[in-house]
Length: 98
Image (cartoon, rainbow, N blue to C red; front, side):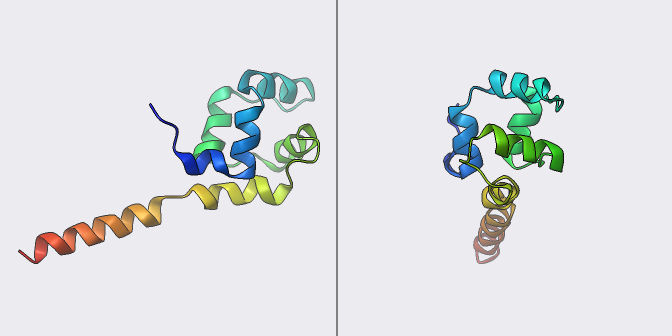
C-alpha cells in the first residue's frame, strides 16, 4: 500500500518518517509521555493531534526541526475531507445531468 504523499511531506510527517516510530514511542515514554504506535500514525493521518505536553516533547525530540505550529498545522494540511466532498459533489452533478 502506498503512503499518501501529503501526510509525509509536512514537517511533522517528514520528521516521523525519518524518526523510527518505535524509537519515537520509546523516547516519548522515556520522558513520561507514553503513546502507542497507533497514536503516532493517527497524528500522521490527521485523525487526531497529540496533547500539548506530548507536542512539546515531540518538538524537543526533533532537535529544532519542528515547532508547535508544525505539529498542530499538520492535521489541517492533510485533511482531505473538503477535497473528498468536492469530488462527491462534482460526481453527483455529473449523474444529475444525464
